Length: 126
Image (cartoon, rainbow, N blue to C red):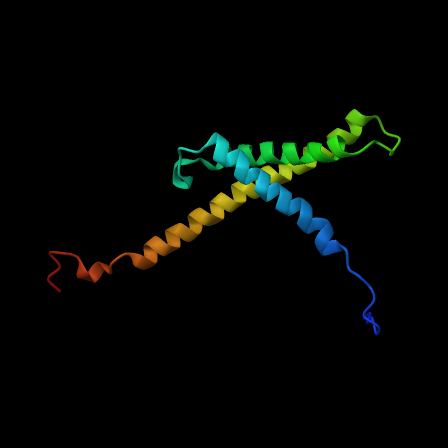
């Protein structure tokens, strides 16, 4: 079933709902990584360590709702905090580790494409 808004008056909030926390998470991760690993290059970091810093950034972002607002859910605050902070931390860590893994795969592809052909090696008599 296709839905068409003939008057163009329906606002879609989903992009903003997910984009704002993702942007905050990315900025927080950049700050955490910059402070913690400022003297290292990406190729010097391990994927688990990169993921751990991503999880720390997720933990920081996960605390923001509790710093900014009140708990009106009826749940104890510690339960609500666990329900929010644990998934954000885990997903942030997985995203960070995945990003580094993808960047390394892309780097390997570029280095393979830039490598000279084996037929041009010195000592080749063919």
